[in-house]
Length: 94
Image: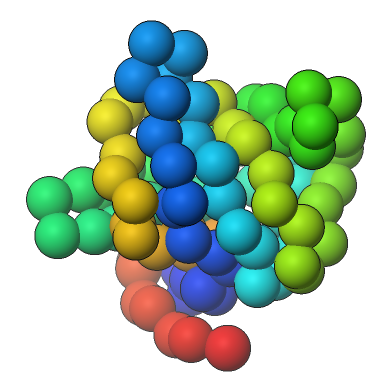
């Protein structure tokens, strides 16, 4: 499956398990994402997206959003959205 660079982690709230993201591409509830960084490699589905504490279903490029994450992430980690279903990971930038 190909991956599209979708955004970057700008902050992580460890007590809440929430990451703040700055988006470069659209992101929707249900999208499969991969979070990659120097010590981070997580894959999960997006279950919750918020802007200013309001739940939304889809965010656009340029939005600053918060999402629930299953593990610890770090500022600067990159967010990739899966774009195909062939079972492999490849990374491409915008």
